[in-house]
Length: 226
Image (cartoon, rainbow, N blue to C red):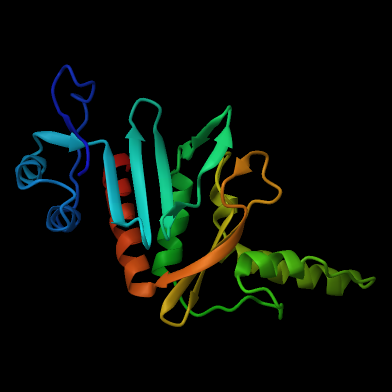
């Protein structure tokens, strides 16, 4: 069940108003994430959510917690029961918390423009994150050939790797790629400045599940912050 915060003067949220998409609320209600009582209160604007969860953590899910004063969002992304954004620092296991507006916008662009777009050079790696490591061993004495090769990789990365939108966040380096009826999600945190729990790997999720979960999360995010 999702934590609900009373929208009262004592709650610290009394200045906040938001219009959570009805479709998202219905899915939360029907999935047992919020009670019927809280569903009705949320519809009437009497209370607000500061934590939301979308999807099934045992397959694919996104969870978030909003910090209004700092304009920060704490986010977890679960693949097969593991939060691929989790990292260790100061003896604790933490997850990403930052202003994630740029990440949300990047995810919306990816979702809206998702199409079959294979990695641009032939590699033996099982996932895009591994292919991107292999591909960057290329070298050439021909400056034109060298530049054209890496421009091709960088252009593909702009559309499939959210790293460029991280905006200073401690965020796992994650790649997203549509492969038939599934979305491949892979990650490479080998060179990260913090110790991520999931260092290098990947898996896939149904395109329909991915689209539903990400779209619901982004609608919630947009209504909250934008």
